[in-house]
Image 1: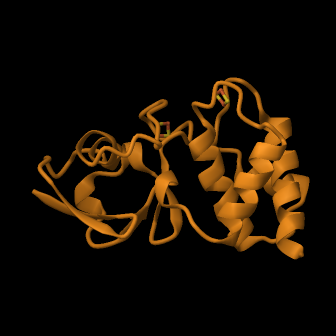
Image 2 (image 1 turned 120 degrees about the vertical axis):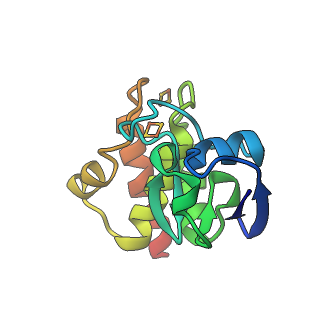
Length: 152
Ligand code: FES
Ligand code: FES
């Protein structure tokens, strides 16, 4: 049994210590916004925050999380999250949508650290989030829009 603090709620989860956090979040806790893409830390679909820092939950065993605060796409809140959500909707960013929760998690993490990212900053920060629908141009534009909104 492992105790996980997800989006402010403590969950007791009956899994082995080496179970990837992604499966505990999706299958045991029932939060399915975080996606399985590659399973080998290459695509970013499974991105969550651990104590505010983005992390690939597909390669993180539950035993490594301890008492850290886990935030999933369902638990996002705050001005950066609001700005990114509004920009994503306005730019109609998603196509199939599968990668998008990971994209949004990474975009918010970027804007928390860098309020005025350049194209290069965005490309570097989002480099690990793969989109098979190639929504990269809209993602970049939406991040610029969100950054401008956060200036106001
Ligand atoms: S599913 Fe974790 S990085 Fe691809
Ligand atoms: S929107 Fe389809 S994979 Fe990114």
